[in-house]
Image 1 (cartoon, rainbow, N blue to C red):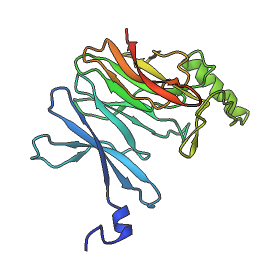
Image 2: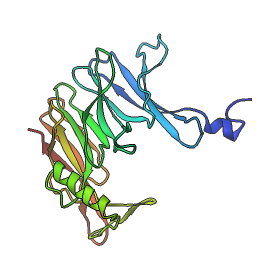
Image 3: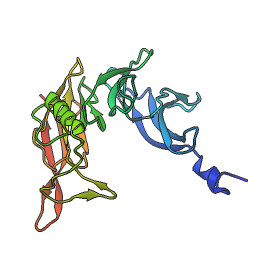
Length: 237
């Protein structure tokens, strides 16, 4: 008997996805998703692998809600996104966390009111960029936090659609628009793409090795109701 002979056993198999490699090639991490204790959802953790294949895999994170998007900084620190409830907020959005190359406990590096969805770093420079949603009318991160508070207090969930597409698979799109941010040394976020519209609806970008610019897949309207993607260079300075 193997796990492929029984559906329940198959569902319980850990799911391994993605690799992140440090700039010097000495460290490799991946994410492993496993069922929680109640077997109602998968929880993802970051594991470190031995590039030489001699040492066993080692688990690095144990967040109750899981971690995602691991990537290394040029200094060798590990970045990842994680949802970590606190006594003041039991359902916070995903924030950016840093696990130092020297070890110790992970610490929160940056956060957005709508959550951080992806992380990219420069291979040869101390540059970190993240993607995350903001409300279209928000002029800054603080303004986005205020507007989200207003919507929450008024119990508003309506979305005003002014363009196509409206849904992605089984989820409504909006009212958020994805922005790219550069992360400052103190965790401050610098908006690199004000008023992006639908350009970064499915964000995918890379940072140049020297950290001077990023290249992103940017959505633009096409004839009729279609959209197409172009490559957009975004200066990070």
